[in-house]
Structure formats: structure tokens, C-alpha cells
Length: 618
Ligand code: M6R
Image 1 (cartoon, protein in one colour):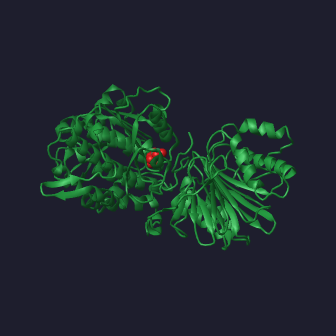
Image 2 (cartoon, rainbow, N blue to C red):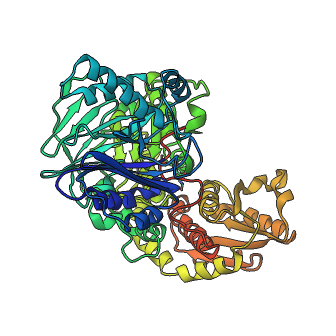
Image 3 (spheres, protein in one colour):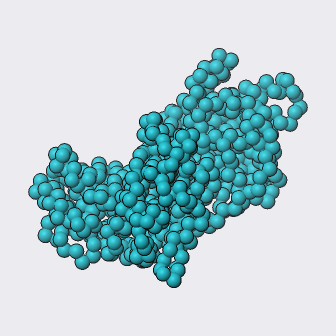
């Protein structure tokens, strides 16, 4: 939800900000803007529409200045418009800010400022922050004239008034030597260069300049000068901390010749899978074993009465697959809940439970809230995340990283398959610890072959592309499956709806007759996932039921399998693997199908309407 950036240094700020915004555009793309300090004035340029609109506008003029801030917006308060775009300024236009988050008490603050003469231009919650900083700045100027720190004090004072979430960048005409940044419940990273410093909502925006960063902690404030950076607590105490090093390379955050990030990331999956698996596999004399040194599973794991998993969106679907895997391999009850439900449902805690949270970004507001709630209840948290340094990774007790590299496309792909892999490894390890599994090596051997099998599916992508070119205009697409296939169906339906805007749903195949089949007509496509061999007959019946009502059908099943040839319109096959591991492969054709349908419909799969990559607000 919105991306912010900022620069102070020796380069021209405008091109630096624009390049950073391109890397952050996945966070919001309904408008964009920059503010640059030019001589003694803040020049603000902001436009409704994608970043290219702003870029085209900036190509018509030169804005010189080496201090600036930038923003790419996903609107929450106030429609997408030039006026509502960030940066926002105070009344005098001498203080400018960019903001990612939501100020929940903005209406109250706005009224308070209006009563003191404040005049507002936009409908946003953000504008009140600029006015509030200016209000305290004016106060401090009267009280303590000449003090160099009054902008910082004014920002800190303003922050104490805000309820909600923020990542902020602040610049002011009176302080050409500094950029102030602060965060609460929204991510913010400070990039450290030589004679220049940066802020950004996410690492890829910094990679062209530095890999040395501070991940700002909750309620920390940073003051960036050209030659150094000061970090402060909310109370104004100075913090001394070593920077973190990030390993991602620039190429992994670029499209690398693919038409879209999503297509690139679908193809990245074989490598992401290997990168996530290899460090955790060891070859012992008796076969493969799982090396989990990073999380040190103790006896508590073997004795835990239950696993609770919570997450949102795709990560929740990974959790659903995880449920089947834990129950299959470790014979342990599993409860899975959507984080936004979990956090408000007064859940029953048992401190002996294993509590797992899954989040690609590690910044999803609902997932963080669910984790904090469980922590308060005494749970020990294991996080599965792709983002080193994210809030989730810092607040969880144990972290299992998916080494998928940056995932830029809004539609999650490689994060999903690597989350699945982590869950399978955990389930197998737990199965061994609990004595439910005597030998995990056949499964681990199978996992070690998945990357090649993914590559084989990708080599056949033209088959899916052709199928999509025939089916992309269907009114409704339903994905059906049983057990593992049902869990994967949920993810298939989400992929398709979020980027192609087709009405797509997933149903447990056995539920069809309990209601959903009423929706089936001649403008429906039913995609059956059929990888659970002992349930093939049931799926054959389900396909007959929908095709006899006029639906078109596709079955995704194993290579060499002929059970569906006579009943389905089309069959797409995937390489054989043990049934319980099928989600790692069966999702790939569905990701491709969603991608090609989106392209056929003229949508940009990387920037689906109304969505943003990282949902850092409720
Ligand atoms: O970063 P997270 O994994 O916590 O994100 C959760 C969801 O917002 C995310 O998976 C979303 O559903 C994606 N757009 C799905 O493709």
C-alpha cells in the first residue's frame, strides 16, 4: 500500500527518486509524485495515473536539487487525483512529506488544526501530518529560536499525536542538509551510501546504490544527512546499531527479458525452489535428512498438541496445503485461519501449540496483528517469510526464510511454492520427531527432483497459452479438487480472479452438489485438479456432472494418466510425484493460465486494478 522513497546526497535527486519509484510501483500505481528542494523552495510535482505520467511531465523540465522525496500511491483516503497524490505540504509549502499507512485519527486532528486556521487542499489523511509538523515547528521557532533540531522535535511531537500506521519521509526548506524518516507499522529502510543516503519502503529500490541498510524498527526516527545517519528512539534517545547487509542482486529485481514480472517469477520457481531446499537438505549415509539448524526444533515440537497457522491471501492457501501435510506426515491436529479473522475472534490459546505465521512480505498488517495477539497469549511464533529484516522476521521467535528472491508482481507465485516447500520440510521433520514417519528420505528425494519437474512444466507453457486463448472470455471459472487438490484450487482461483478479473472460485469437489453446481452453465469453465489417485473416480463423476450441464472442462493430472481422457474436454499433465507433494507442481499450470488469461484480456498482470502488493493497512 503505497511506496515511499527519499534521497539526500550529491546526485540530482529527481532521477534517483524516479528510478526508486519504478521499483516500488508494485506497491501502488494510481498516482505518483516527488518533491525536490531547489534553492530555497520545495518543487512538488504529482500526477494521477501510473508513474509514466509523472515521468513524462518531468521530462519537460529540469528540477535541480540533491534532496527529495517520492511516492507511489494506492489510494485509501480520497480518490486518485493530482491533489490527493503525495507529497503533501503544510500551508506555507515549506515542509513536504510522503506517507505510507493510514492515520486513523486524522479527522479529529484535521478539525483541531482547522480550528487553529489550518486550510486543507486534499481529502487525504496524510495532509494532516504536514500541517501538524508545521504547527509544532512554528511553536518551537517561537520558543527556542536558533535551535538546529526544531524540525526533528516538531516531527517527533507530531508523531505522538498520530494513531494508525506510518512510514514517513519529511523534508523542509529551512533544513537543506537533512531528510527525516520515521515508521510505525509500515516498513521503511534506510540505505547507506558514501556521501549520500536513501530511504525506501522496500529493498529493491535501493539495490542500484547500496546493500548496506538499516531496517527501521517500530517507532524509530532516522535523520539522514549527506555524511551520516542518526537513529533515535521515539523518546529521542540516540541508537547505535550496525547496519544490515542485503544479498539480493539488482538483476533479481528486474524483468530479465520477460514481458512481465509475473511471468519471470513463474519461471524463477525452479531456482527459488532449489535455493530454498538446498541449505536444508543433507545427505547422510542412510539417505537425505533435513537440516533445520536455523530454527532448532526442541522437544516442545514433538509434544505440541496442535499447530495453528495464520496468514492472508496466497500465504493462507499455502497454510491450507500445510494443514494436509502436517496431518499426513506428523499426525498432529492443525487449525488454519485467515489472519484478519483470527485477530478479532477471541481465539483459544494453548501456549504448548506450535504457532506458524506465513507472509511473503513479512509486513501484512493483519498477519502481524494475529502474530502479536498470539504472542501476547504466550505462543512461540515460527514465521515463514521471504523478507529478511521484515517486521515479521524481527518479531517472531523463529524464522524460516523462503529464499525466493524479490517478488515484485502483485500476484504471488514463487513465494507460494517456496512457502509450500518450507511447510513440507517442517511437516516431514515433525513426522520424524513425533515418530509418525520412520524415514523421510523418499520424500526428500522427491523434493530434490521438483525443480527439474517445474522446468518441464514450464517447457510446455504454450499448451496452456493456447488453452487460455480459447477460454479467457468465460464468465465463470471454477476450480475443484479434493484434499491437497482442494487447497491448491483456492490458490488457482485467487490467481485467476486477481489478474484476469474473471469470476473464479474454488470448491471442494464434494461440495458441488451442495449448492455451487447451480452456478454451472454453458459459459462456465471447470478446472479439476486430479492428483489424489484414490479419489480419481469421484473426480470423474464431478466432471460428468458439470459437463452435462454445459460447462467446458480441463483436468490437471499426472503424466500417463488416462482416467479423464474420455470425460474432460482437455487434459494437461504434470510430471509424476508422490500424491501428497502434488501442490508443488499442480499450481504451475494454473499460474500460467491466470497469466495468459490476463494478457488475453488486455490487463497488466503485474498491476491488477484495485490491488497492491503489500497490504500494510487493514
Ligand atoms: O506478503 P503476504 O504474503 O503477507 O501477502 C498476503 C496477501 O496479501 C497476498 O498473498 C495476496 O493475496 C497476493 N496478491 C496473492 O497473489
